[in-house]
Length: 470
Image (cartoon, rainbow, N blue to C red; front, side):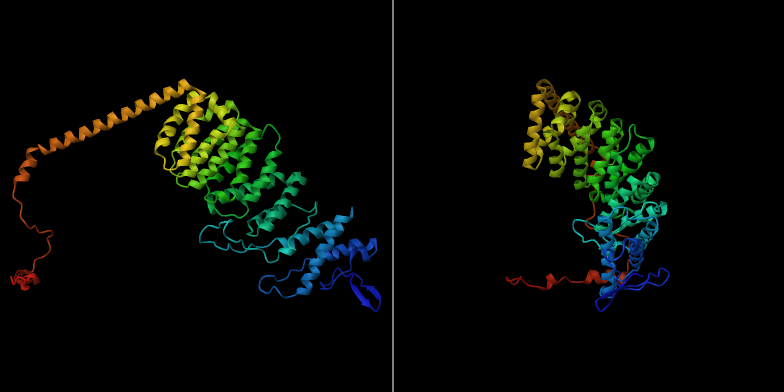
């Protein structure tokens, strides 16, 4: 082993012993050995870094040797960064082995497995105690499916720093290893399936979606059937998970990337969003409205026509929502120029759907901000097509009058039924019949002694006299 042993002013280089046990000593620096010895020294440093230390139960133990390991890792990074063609064939398996020994481990149990849902904005994640030693450099030739699977399993770590580096590492592996691409996509699919249909808990969904966003961006056209199935069967069902807020921006980006690649997917995507639309979760509804606007920003006019009616029926419900943020977010669509151009081209279909909700809530919604936004939307509709607007107004008033007439008719029918009931001879006979002043409420067994005691009992009022002496 190449070590630094000082004897007076002289530095002695020990002979390497690759078969012997690890000796926790500081190895020499690369600049202090001959170029011919640097490969051997690099391998020794890699093997030195395969020793694991306790960072959890006793963080202060072996501080000297932890520092030796940290320094060795830093020196290797610096050596690779500033020198070219230094990673030779014998180094590859050693690097992969060192990475696997330090990185692949059983993740600890969730910090709150049965309690409330983990909130990344409020709760502190459990950070990996040994993080300084978990920063990877990977060699190319020795990475296989098992290695990738273990790498993907680590995405469930609660430590966001680890997940961030894993994201970069996996993305680079995907870019360089063409033979592993299908396997990586398949294993990510399996993680998503398990997350959607079994656990509803995984810490790395956002990072995996971020990787997929870049992968989808590079898909060749026309899209393969496999990729379309991935969108419809994997990505879209992710919208129904409770923890959507944790990864929604990345998910929306992936969906929009698909639609930019193939506009014919717009109809199934929009219909799936409407299918999964939240019924009782207003913040989630706002997220859906955000994503829907991103989709409308890239939608083709020919595809818009296919989804306009169900889409605007849902928007009408959102405008009528008592939650002002939902109504406000829906009404912001009327500030989007491209969406307004689509509405203008199809006003004859859209205005009759939207007008009742807009007109009704312009008078009844509790929030004044919503009133202003509704007036703005109605004004834009009026400027768009005055005649159509007037027709919708008249139709709405006619519907209101019809509703009032039906309501009055219903009320009169009930009054008639009530009068008929009152004039029923049987009812009148029952009313004339004398009824006892006191009726026994139950058929409990009667005890003769209890009955006599109750009859002979004198109320306290009978024994009290008033101020008048009466």
